Image 1 (cartoon, rainbow, N blue to C red):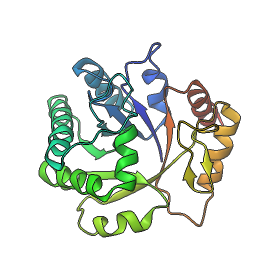
Image 2: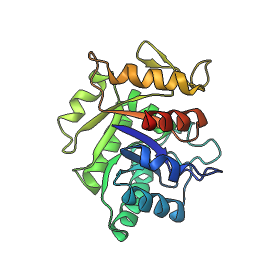
Image 3: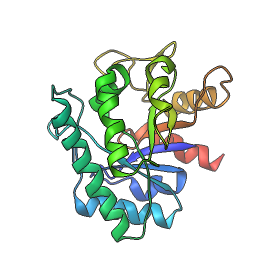
Image 4: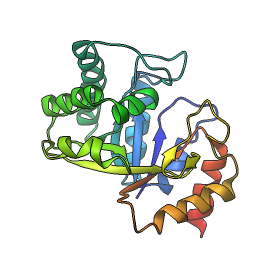
Length: 224
């Protein structure tokens, strides 16, 4: 299933074009970007297109679009994520939508992937809000996640990225050359490579709506 980061207040806004092309919408909830209007608009679009709704929390970092890590205590991190997720869930309830999963954004996603303390806090947030919520995690890092999945009622969805560069199965850091694929043909090729992968457990493939080549790739995949 395809997922995409949406509700990111982009100009022009690709949400209406992208939403019919995907199965899961990761909606920004105010950490790196987003406000009540953008969240509600994206929730309504997802409902209209029968797309699963996910919340996309981040460090409180609009300046760097959530792509810089912050050193927070466990309690500070819990409060940060819990406030974003619970507010977004309330908006979902108000508009007759169901929140299905959590996918951290940017540096928070990276830190969750490499720091068990961050992953532990996010799992505690899920437990406090709705234990049935699924957590989207990076595929190929089974040792890091296995002990937590056994204790998570909602479980994990393992994700790869159609539009990010990889070295083997290690994602190239955004600060390095080749981190982002900017040609739609390359993105489509990588999408099919992951779709046909039989050696790695992959549940969902991500496209980024702030990458014009990714939006073009999604459109061409749908037409195909």
